[in-house]
Image (cartoon, rainbow, N blue to C red; front, side, top):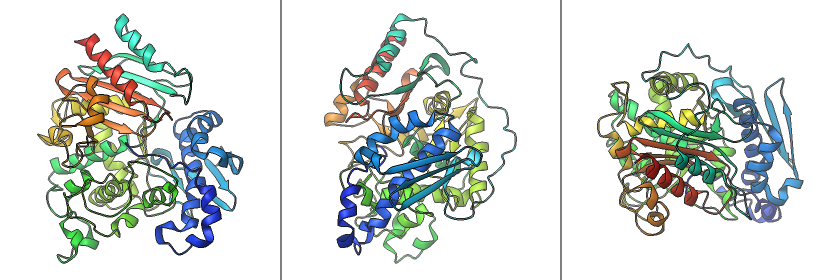
Length: 464
């Protein structure tokens, strides 16, 4: 399962346990309790100032289920003039500030001026749709959209916000929830990991990075350091061998997990992962952890120029602009590292444009953006992940077994996907040159995977 926003109900227990946990390293209650207001302030800031969403509706749909009964202790306020959101939980407070194209940042001191991007170069590919919403003419596609937006009869809601179906590079059907449209950026959560995959691919294509060589992390440069053997490939495949928590599941200790603290309670996110000890040789153990992707994000930042402005310009000029993405926002931490595990916002059409890059084998308008073979490399199953189906920055249907194979059979054996918490999906079916995007806020236990399987199967049948 992709990046999961922390379930904060156990934090009430953490308050009671605080005296006994004070000396337990990553179990420090101050860091755990700091997760809640940071999550609320950051997410609300992005929802309001990046996406233009109605704040209390977003809070109610996206955040209240995570807060559970702690909602009565949480307080937040929005300063529209300053572009800030303040949230608190008892004595713990966080302030998130909007920084334009860099999204929102948890501010803990003086905040640098946001980067100003030059006018984008023309996209390499033609537009995927006109200005208006593309209503399907095929009754089968219309019925598929009806099912995609249907809510369960009881239990948690799915809150589907957008569905876009792209065939042969053109939108053939799309639908949006009230208040959402083709120009509304929506949070991709762990679909951002697949964007990190693309930025790495750009560096490889430009001859600036080798995936099978020791990762360019200065702190690991000594040959006697066991982390020296870790490669970008092993990081991308979640097989680095680092002991740094898990982002696959959650329980009452989630707020104490280093991956949650890394994203919501630290200024330099990659530094926390960089210091993690080794528990297995690279490639020997699959362990899905956001720390792996944050380390790759720091590598991308350093290759792009070493700061937030440089990496933002690099991402836009070398990827987003070439694809014709109109409103992508890749958020950064306080030291300028992209939060490449979980924090990119983009319109549903932008996410579809991104998926089209992989449906077209890394080519855009005849220009090779990703290395030849990169798409198949990304979709190739990582050993040890057969029961999950993980490739290299993408989830894959190739070679999977057990329950995942059953739940995703309708997508096709060759398909692969970017997938994010709460039911964000970009499913790529290469042989059909088909891309299906779904964005929403699903708090159901399986986070929309069954409905997504049905949607893709319906679309495949309708477009066969």
